[in-house]
Image (cartoon, rainbow, N blue to C red; front, side):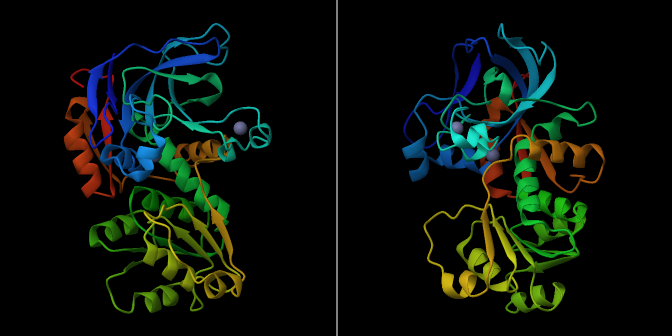
Length: 347
Ligand SMILES: [Zn+2]
Ligand SMILES: [Zn+2]
């Protein structure tokens, strides 16, 4: 099969032939059709410090996909060949306290496809049956391919409990835009989105934001307060990972409010915890992955009911052979979701 792998310890990826994965009795073999390029893939592509310490040389990259079941192990009962599926890419150990409490997203031994294990930029990928998710017929392929980042957005917004709240979202990349739609669907009183690019702010408006604010304006923090009931937002949803967005976002949240942090800072950062968090009594929640499978059910419900629509997000679809162009595009257009056609003809 063809797969896009990290074959040398340096920037770039290699498209090459490799063996189709063999199946254990509880495994499902999936032939991906569309696979999404994510920020994580970018780190691996560029081979930054985190990747060099984390990613084994030789693995196929990629963790967001939709595809069809190509084969099932002898003990698999829940899936049949040909069924349309995607999968939870975080594979918990199944044995620790968190896994046993159905909180495998907190498993300290979690392994992630395309990061620690072979991923989905390949004509076939193997997943344990418990990580495979059937796709509702009403969800189209390009949306199903990005259930992973949709899940990140749903997880963040639901953890922050936005109903009736003034919500501030910092960062209108793909996940920030999806979070905007989710916050609206979950009954936020107002949703203010901050970004540095006018195009992204227009997309946020199309996703239902009640106000958008350009953080290049000198008085943007005052504008956010004005749009959030005067006192500042009840909830911060931090999607950018930018140090200034994190500190200023925390500074804006009203006393007693909540901050849910998903964006990953490139470097360790220094925060005035006393004034930003402790004396304000903020609840700060770190978000990783998705709740398995609570978040997946919530995301499916939002999509199938039409409460969450992703029309404002641009999708760019390129064949896997054009991966260099696709990665270039994904790095420059934060609010565009780039998909690779993997198993399809001419890919
Ligand atoms: Zn991802
Ligand atoms: Zn575990």
